[in-house]
Length: 597
Ligand code: GLY
Image (cartoon, rainbow, N blue to C red; front, top):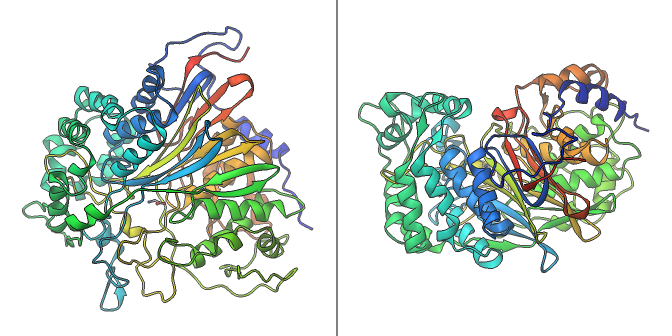
């Protein structure tokens, strides 16, 4: 029998005391109808008619403007994402990829749009190796070799055609305006530029755009990107074939194959394998979501090639089969789900992924049985999702897997509209700053998504590279549906910590009874079948001693994730939530603001 860490009482006292989210923008007692477009960044907004939450004020405003002009949640999601390509160019942009989970109110169904990058046709299982060893990760990060065939523009086109009401050209207009007019550089943008300055300086095109005068733009200065405005305008005018086989595609391929290395740069830059045929062959794909039943609700997430939906889903299933759920159980369920993710999940179009078994209640019960009152030995072994389950198998020894990369990269946004449609959209160019290489004169960075593959040698690993294959992702845009009605949407950046962040928020909300803003603000920890659980300082302070007493090894990390979420309340009321402080705080807005009365 597992003992519950005193939650929610402890969580309520400590979490709420330490990390109370900011007050709403107007007094609680004075219902206020605010302007349709927000002018300042707030992390919490409540009201009606639609909502948007992103990490960035300009992107949120773009989404709200689209809703105000009659666009739906998909139109708003694409407009906001395109704007993030301007204001968050180190996490988003036209040469990246991502996943949309979408509740379509008319059809009353959840669907997903996969815009994941693909490996070029010339890529093989050993392309990320040299002399039988993995190439150095740092070298792969800043290279043409790691650039995947971009999926974002094809994804936007498909998403708008199937579920939107705007054309791509129209959806790009807010982003074009921001790129032309410019945005005010904040501390996060400055710091991300500064962290990347060494490698940005090694490429002429990147230095020219992001290091004006040879240095990161100053906080408070206005940053314009007329090249990106022109790129978006031409994409709107010429259509996506301009990229997928046309002139823009040729320029991307030329940049990948022959990166514009600055004279005197002392860096080995491996060229890439991408060709124009790879771009011609690229397709965004509409896929069924992953679904698990949890506490009488349905939790929908992203199917492979993302491991987001299956890993969050498996962990929820494991937790649901335990008699009690506290933070200890959260960490252990996550540890087990990651062992299975690492062993079994890859691009299901090219490898067999036992998805139904991974998400079955019987498998979850078998896995849950391994959770005792103290932390299990590291590493946990993967289970056997083969349909043949024992009530309580003996724990097998696991094999060490290389630590998963985690960082602040990627961006997540949520939108909802007056018709009841909801989008959860995670967009990325992989590392913060992608592969560090701007396509000359086009205003955007290339992704380095192919570093999400297992480099190998790793016989049998489902995530080894292959021709046309999509690297396994951790992106976990998630929509919760109750009684056929969407009630919550959530997601986060953060590499493989995305999965634990989404999981922890669902647990905070539905197990520990926190409000959504509190669930988002609460301190986080992430256990991904690693020897140590990484935890934010406030988490360590609040729960560290209790968890160490139960055998957990905890290590501090500054910050985990940068969530946006929304909740659909009664009578059409929507609560949009962004981070109050992480990554500089995000921006939540509703179309018609009305505070709690
Ligand atoms: N590149 C981040 C992810 O796909 O999880």
